Length: 461
Image (cartoon, rainbow, N blue to C red; front, side, top):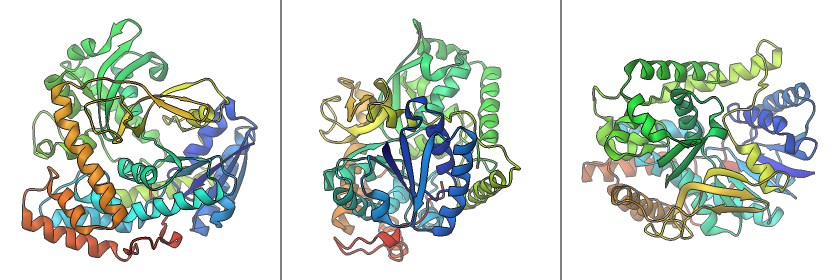
């Protein structure tokens, strides 16, 4: 048996999906002990009931346990998935509302800009604390990080510990799925082949094929067909409506990525809401696209949705998942455990030379081959000038945020913030950062090295 621990196992939004996918992965059947760990005992109890129900309905493929004791959770683990958010939605409210008072509208607020920096500031010490505990109780385990800001948190663990770490993001799968719909491809995961590179939530697909078909060439014609685009929008809305917890949809379109494709000849491999924060001129009103913003009220309603869905599954009023989700988490675990053939995916690992003209060691999102105890990035090669111009400043800024958050250097963090494209006023940036620091103090001990596990909060999603 291999042991997989989920830190944040009481998450109403994440755990049921991961449990169903693990049950449905034939390579893991009968070979996996799943340990759900959370500091919120009440949430953990609720979610464990649903996890047991899913496991039972899908053939008892897993051994599922739960605990509120971190040593018990980590001891002897082979894999540790992290799905937490320090401070939860209460902290994220400040990430969104404080910048908004200074005229900065964030469409997501969890990756870049002031919201991403604030979120990194309070999460980095927690992740370092988890990594230190892993070094003690499961030093050979892989950390599979699903928490944003994914680049900064994954990189902080890599730089501060000996723990093997990788960042997982599902944005590229959503794009593949929608492009499959547009191209008339049913099995998008198997049939659509990509060449892509970037930084999490700002990754670019420079080649895409279906068999011998050049899908990017076909896409040039398809994105000028307004009826096809409306059908694609309806498809995205229908998918959102059937997903657990998305009755309150965050609403993500495709029109911005298509306009950028027209200009650059490459397709962004993530949702429009994430793209916009790296290119803030796209947040302005434009008839060619509309980027939806996500006020905290939407996320709070979504949290209520997922709680209600979990409750309805426990009562039998809602069906449990019987098909694998869009996530590739289970396939990655199976390949890393050596229980399946090597697996090709798009994951986040340090630049070890796969892109020679970006900083060595910077965390890049690109294609990798996952095999037993190994995640090997595929060489991408030299970037076109326009893509290097877009990515290099982001990579440098993210590295600054990692360093600032690890060393608790408030001025270095401000330097990184002042370089962010969302910032347009020096005095506002200084005052805003002071407010964000004050808002975060209740969630984290700011003294270097004083990291406490009790500051963990259950993730909202």
